[in-house]
Structures are given as C-alpha cells and as structure tokens.
Length: 275
Ligand code: C2E
Ligand code: MG
Ligand code: MG
Ligand code: MG
Image 1 (cartoon, rainbow, N blue to C red):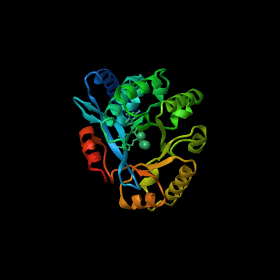
Image 2 (cartoon, helix red, strand yellow):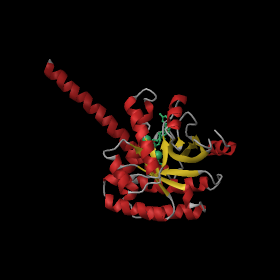
Image 3 (spheres, helix red, strand yellow):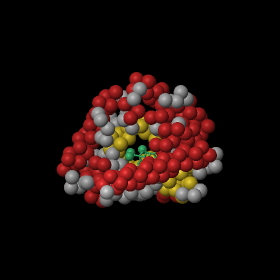
Image 4 (spheres, rainbow, N blue to C red):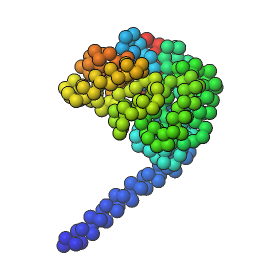
C-alpha cells in the first residue's frame, strides 16, 4: 500500500543519512592522526604573468593522501576540518610548509596560501604567519594570503583588524573567488586588497556567455582603477585566455597552463621559466 511504501521510503532515507553521517564521523576521527602521520601534502598551481609569460606565483593547494581512500579533494575534507577546528593546526603546518618551499624558488616567484575563516577565530593567526616567515627566512612580500568574502561576513570588525595586522607583517592580501558572494563590491571598500581573483564561474562560459563577459570586463577595470593586481582563475582554453589578455588582466591561473603539481614538479616547471 501507499502507506507502507511511504514508510519504506523513510527507511531508505534513514539508511542513506546514517551512512553519510558515519562517513563524516570516520573522516573526523581519521583527521585527528592525519597531520602526525604526514598524510597531508601541498600541491602548487602556477599563476602566470601575462606580460612576461613567467610564473609570478604558485598557489598552495591542500591534498589528503588517505591510507585507504587515496587522494581526497579539499572540498571533501576542509569543511569537516573547519567544523572540528582541525583546520587551525593543519593551517599552521601548511603555512610553514609553503613558506619553506617558496624560499627555494627564484625571488620573482611568490607563494599563495588560502586562509579559512575559522583560522581568524583563533588568536594566534598573526603569530603563526610571523613564525612561518621567520623560520623559512622568506621575504614577507613573497607571501600572499587568499581570503574569501566569508572572512569579512562574520565578525568583520575583528577580522578586518587581523587583516591589517597581517598586512603589517609585509605580506600581500588577495580576495579569492571574487564575484560569488553577497556583496563583493562592498568588501572592496572595506579593505585595500593587493589582489583580486575572479572566480572561475565567470570564465567557464566564456567566450560565449555575454553576462560573464560583461562582468569580467567590469572587474578588470575596477581592479585596475583600485590599483590591485587582477587575476582570473580557471582558464582552460586559448579562447578564454585571449579574452582575459585583451581585457588587461595581470595574471591567469588554470589548467591551460598547468594543473596543481607536487612540489618537486613545480620546482622544475619554475626553473624552466616561460610557460
Ligand atoms: P581556490 O582557492 O579557489 O583554488 C582554486 C581551485 O580551482 C583549486 O581546486 C584548483 O585546482 C582549481 N582550478 C584551478 N584551475 C582550474 C581550471 O582551469 N579548471 C578547473 N575546473 N579548476 C581549476 P582545489 O585544489 O580542489 O581546491 C578547492 C578549494 O579548496 C580552493 O579553492 C580553496 O578554497 C580550498 N583549499 C584548497 N587548499 C586549501 C588550503 O590549504 N587551505 C584552505 N583553507 N582552503 C584550501
Ligand atoms: Mg585560492
Ligand atoms: Mg579561487
Ligand atoms: Mg574557488
């Protein structure tokens, strides 16, 4: 009957929910030991300066090499690391690791590190960045910290002060995934970002998407008049590159030039110079 099949549906739903909760729980537990077991690694993706065609920066992207499940993408485990607070210790480890790597690269190449909003809730963020810089001897101007709008959304007064403290260390601050939040434009007024990275969502349907094209054009002009370095993420085709280039963007990042690569491979790619 309809009644019993209805109940059956609920039961199926329960089972699926339960499985999902269990997987979530297992990941939480496994994450506790992952740092000590050295299961995290950083891959690096180049940002290419369009004028010189040289790598100007590499973005550090976190990977989890799980002993049973293999490589896990950040979208799968970072939300859980944020929920448990594990992102704070992982974030400190990866700041150290990224700065140590970058100190071996040519001076023209910077390193970009993503910061989670949860790291801003932790008192020691500025100290952790200062430590990573001093123990690696990396020139602070070669460290770029990428934040998303979420950082300015909650506890914005406190977080703005932290951003200013970070800036005083001499590092650069970039706004990541620009255009995807509630009020991207407003945030540009609240803090003088060094760099603005247009989200890949606006590049995906280029060259044909008229709305995306208009937005990309507008952001290029905006960034230029605010004196920010302008970057576009997610460039995969020559057509997309041609548009970004003609709009006067400073840098591009995307599979067209390179996917994120392990540290050893990125060092070789940087040494080769022009991409
Ligand atoms: P994000 O900071 O915006 O990083 C760019 C993402 O776009 C990366 O995904 C990169 O692999 C991907 N990407 C780059 N070029 C292309 C392209 O041409 N096409 C496509 N389809 N994708 C491209 P990934 O590595 O999976 O990272 C996803 C997100 O996870 C990052 O977005 C960032 O928000 C977060 N994340 C990664 N590493 C860290 C980290 O160390 N700390 C924190 N807090 N977040 C991180
Ligand atoms: Mg980023
Ligand atoms: Mg991004
Ligand atoms: Mg993104």
